[in-house]
Image (tube, rainbow over all chains, first blue to last red; front, side, top):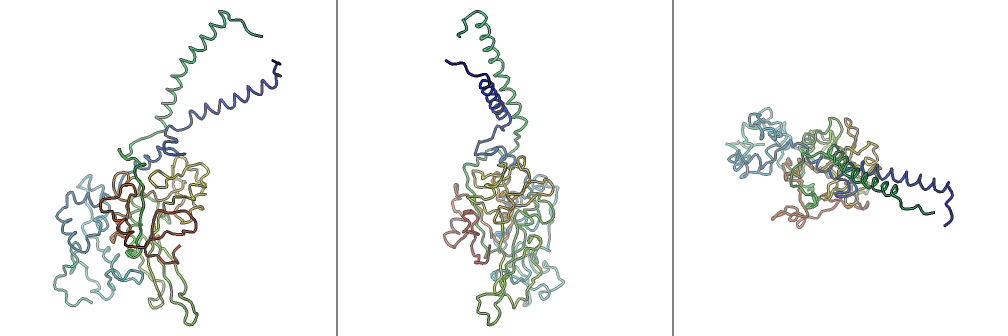
Length: 155
Length: 269
């Protein structure tokens, strides 16, 4: 076997050194969960999933307020989320002493103010004509909107 | 030239083997230590992303433009104040054609004041000039072939196995390529963290069995959320898709979104 020239031996050793240090660095620097699901850090999924929840969801409301929940379910507002009007409730579910807004009637106009972009099936009123200046709750019950006590020809 | 097998060479080889035995556990211990530093937990238990495939259907006919979804999204995801939205509502106003112009419709106006978060009180066009008008809620379109994932130079954004397109904030370098790549304008640069941010489908909620905040809060059920791998017994999406014609935004781009729209017009982009 002919003797390998020394410059080739050095080159081979240098290559092995570079590749070896790359492999060692990769071994230590690649996060453990990398390639768990794909070419990314699998732990990132659970990190994103660990953020705290702000809106508790309608099911949590039902756990305590089942009577109000049942009543709401019988009327037009049954598709509404409790937290849409009363505000985000996760803090309230964890500590009932943290109260939510009971009435927040800027919300009536938010959905029911007449707007030409709104679909025609949706009930809308012109705020200037429809008993302007009076609170919606004078006539309407938010949880049972079709119960309107003696409304004299509402415009 | 072959080296003779001597006592010295045997001792040398034995020493090398012992060193390997000592070093291997040390390497393993070092790797475990690195793992504990880099990997944090605290996530909901029992969520397996390979067992779900999420999708959303948006029924434009039901959207009343109240803006609760955009507002709830900001609250739920702690999106910074200012013009940054993970979901928002666009108002389309299609004006009547000029008399005698021979066109099917006039100018198309699209606006989204404050992302529609506060509703749409002011109408920029007299009602008599409007041919047609409607609201279109927008969010991450959950592309099967996501352009944003393809352009990320550091692999920080990825398609999760459950269909959500997520960003690893620890890897994101804030270059903004993905923001330009998204054909639906669904990404923005977080001014606080200087990393790209987008709709995660409320990943922290869906992994706990809750609906995304926008779906939860929508008063008219204009947004329907579902799981293609575990459809509910009376799956609302299945019923909806059976009875309605749905389409996706910008189908010519071949992104194959998993956010389906019902009731949109050709003007919607």
